[in-house]
Amino acid sequence: MKKKVSFGERFRYAFDNVMSRGTGALIFWLVVITVIFVALVSGVLFLIRLAPGMGFDALVWKVLNMTIDPGTITGEDLGNWPYLLAMLGVTVAGIVLLSTLIGIVTTGIDTRLAALRKGRSRVIERNHTVILGWSEQVFATISEIVEANANQPRSSIVVLADKDKVEMEDEIRTKIPRTGRTKIICRTGTPIDTDDLRIARLETSRSVIILSPEHREPDSEVIKTILAITNNPDRRAEPYHIVAEIRDPRNLEVARMVAKDEAELLLASDLVARITAQTCRQTGLSVVYGELLDFEGDEIYFHRESEITGKTFGQALFCYESSAVIGIVPEDGEPKLNPAKDYVIKEGDQLIVIAEDDDTTKLSDISDYGIDAGAVAEGEPCQETPEKILILGWNWRAANIICQLDNYVPPTSSVLVVADTDKAGAVIESECRDLKNLEIAFRKGETTSRRLLDELDMGDFDHVVILCYSDKLSTQEADAETLITLLHLRDIAEKKGHTFSIVSEMLDERNRNLAEVTRVDDFIVSDKIISQMLSQVSENKALNKVFEEIFDPEGAEIYLKPASDYVKLGREVNFYTVIESARKRGEVAFGYKLGRFTNDAAKMYGVVVNPEKSEKITYAGDDRVIVLAED
View 1 (cartoon, helix red, strand yellow):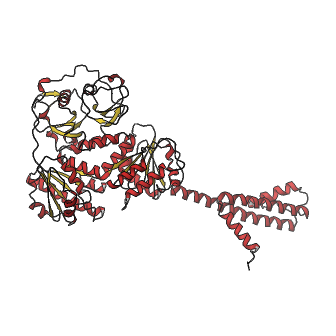
View 2: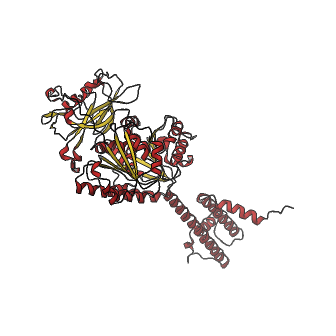
């Protein structure tokens, strides 16, 4: 037998539903109750004539005033006792109603403030950069975008992450105290939730950066975020400009299928391996990369110039005094660095240039370049000798770094791996079997041990790579071991006069700052490089193809070659002469490194990218020319 629902239960159920509808509904029903109360009391008083001499309209006004303003009960309110008692009741009811209204409004305001603190309100920005996710990379990424927007009158960055809004704002203010004209807006939400993505207003954004989260399966989160953006029913019609980081090469193909042509994907592990392999072998290359990847100095831009249509690429190299031409973007093709010198520039083609800013690339009015033909070196470059490389430490990227090194070192070079793990030997055996130029040896040992490092005879090595034990230690513990090893190596190099280069890996940017670089060949690889590339590509998606070619051993790469290969030493020449010498060799020269400033941080360790071409320099034996070349 069904139990009948009582009137009281129905009333409580209806009351609960009203209370759950929010502040607006509560105020509405409070007003309805007040109107009914005033009308009912006024009608009763009027019918039983407790307020003689007052019409119904005046009586309603009187009761209404006493209900909403209990302070109106004063000595002026005269009448018989029944009337005064009725007015007292009205006043008490008014106090209850007014207190309830104040409580509702106060609660509503508190709720609204709490909602604002939670960061759930939708932004109304346009042409903004959206950063999805939160990790230590977010600070470097924001800093780079702020620097890129320095010449913009108004810009904004929206950060959407599954983290408290106030905490995000506090951390950003602490680590990035100056943001210039760029407004930083934080919102709390899950990037893989299509409803939460509406908060960041992706449909009006300029670009979207997806940060790799700090957990065991970061790529799956990135791929799901791309899906949430591209498959959103409320998405915009035109393609998004998405930049995302993929950690594991095995996930790259799936990410490309999901992203299609709407996302530029950066394979972080591969890039770090290639940068490590390249920078450990060439003194000063890390400074060149730092100059090109951040927004403070000279960067890579795309420039269209109608006046050079019909000229060859070789002629275009001399057309700009303060910008360096390094490649071409055909109107119907992909960027090409260091193309054939007889390539004819067509209408619609763009130049790839290195310049201080995107609006500083201007044609030079110089007709006589002052090339000293007699200073151009005619001899063949010297042959490279085999190199000895030491790798201290181990993680999942080590095998890739060894394979990348094999693409750059001369034949019969060797690498010794020293690590405090048995896994390293097995991985080397399985993943590094098809090397062409490297011979590998493995030795188990504690890489923080000074005794072990002294036994290795560090002066026998040309390059040293320190890898963190990120596979088995926490971030701080891994960085601590790397830092200890690095300090030992620096001390050994100083006391014994060794000249080996050092490339070390740090996970936390704060620890990177503790291990301040002391020499041009003392380079620290960290996630900051990936943040810089994410920021660059978010500003111009075509740059991803340029970076892929620079870091690809099969493409045109950056080399620092002896100045004596290009010009006669001890003879004053301008940079046009260096460019002409490099042009004859099928290369593009865009900078130099002066050996006398190798340890002078104030002078960028002697590295000059995109110099004024008319400026004359006398090169010495330890100076280098920075070129783009196939090998």
